[in-house]
Image (tube, rainbow, N blue to C red):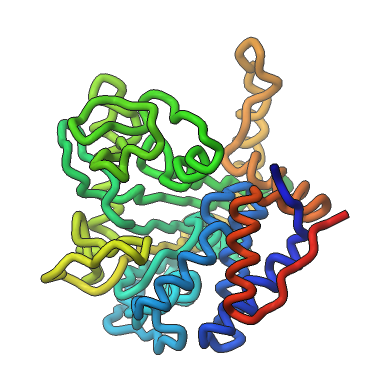
Length: 363
């Protein structure tokens, strides 16, 4: 069963919860914007369903609600940002802003970030560059749930990559993808529904494929993009490793098996090599390469040609990365955001605990 809430009411709930744990109003607003962007775009695993998780991290002393985010090293086109253990939902927009500022003057900006926490959906941060006629790049490492090809050990996170590219008359191209066959949040949704995971998503503790979405709780692991070696998992493994290195080895954050877990009940590994979770951001000014109007005209042509490709039987059309999320956002802004009953109950309990108002459902 589902309850349906308006975007505005869930945004207000998130804002009030973040303020209740000590976030300054401006940072709480930034965090709520980033969090609810996931629900709007249909990425339900990374939206309000994770709000309680952020609060539990704060309760365990792993989130600083009033971080002093700062640049600790920089050149004209690069920087390292220290997030001071703040919410990744706050640290990441700051760091992406630095990348955009550097691109405005140097043509491109590249920012690696340490001492942060989970930052929501990667696409939200990459899309911040679009308003500036820039291409945006966003990636983050995450807690180790993924076994490299041929391994039974969990050494990488789902480590997403997002790229946002502006167009002219057409909507922007927005690719936002995990480097695993499926994000962990999708397994959490299957667990709530009591459904099986598709083949190729997960392996058990012995490295055998399984359809049990709870297998990671018993020593199993998520699989890299491709599932197994025969279907290209070595490519997903390589992409996840690149994200880990750019986000953390480059910034001084924790990497590989040392990345702190998102769930507060799991202990943080001892003798950490770095600080917190790491992110990496890029911004490229289009007119640093060619006139923006010419580029956008060609992007429009590119998008229209791919959309007009003849679809396989049974499919209405060929999609452009970002199409499903953009269309979902339009629907949910007008018709509301559906929330599964288990998540709604969790949010209601959180609201009572934090002394904030729980919103009424729509209709």
